[in-house]
Length: 292
View (cartoon, rainbow, N blue to C red):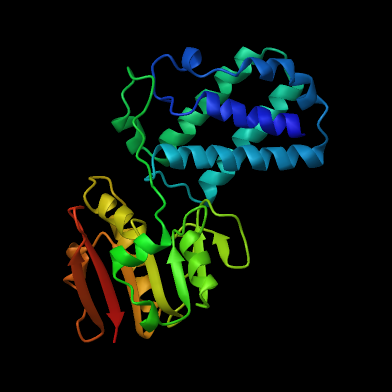
């Protein structure tokens, strides 16, 4: 099974950054030579290990899509469909011998899946380009996030929730290490006692639960992106934004960047207190919204 996992890693690495919408899809996206060499191992994989490998391939493929464009969004149904695509691939590798044909069918399925789940992708990536320009989401150090958002740790209200905490959950771990009750979630983080794998639309924000909520270049960045996009899902983001605010305890705050002036100006100032400050040399503001 280890050899197959390495093969999955190498295969994703080989096609990293390639454009699924390129007009020469079959010649651009191919299986690496080692896939042909170890095809027999796929045929001999038992059902239990096959399931684990399909899960592994699906998760790694998702992470690659997120790496290419942080604005890609895949709901539960999309993830189930992707898993089915990889299940079909495994069955083909076990039953067929024409590796090139299997590869061609597989990548056409991925292209269709991406087109149907994120239609904007086909509009922004040209058919003539073999590689895509990545829209990357970087992880920042805990100290930098605290500084950018102007969070006063001595007055932080617990418990704390980090929305989109990143794969490493660095801020969550840092706050926990200094004795602050902190939890985080992210679509790429591994499930732990202090972190869960969710995206913000899957996560249910309970009313009056959190003392502090933090999201640096996460939720609000995506909200702004959808607000200014013609086909953006801005209504859904606006509803989730209000759900987040109502999940604060009285006296609790939501810290985020960039700011969202287009919705902040409509908040009831008898319930929420909004404070903005410019983030040096970035061109955007950071915001804290306190529930009164």
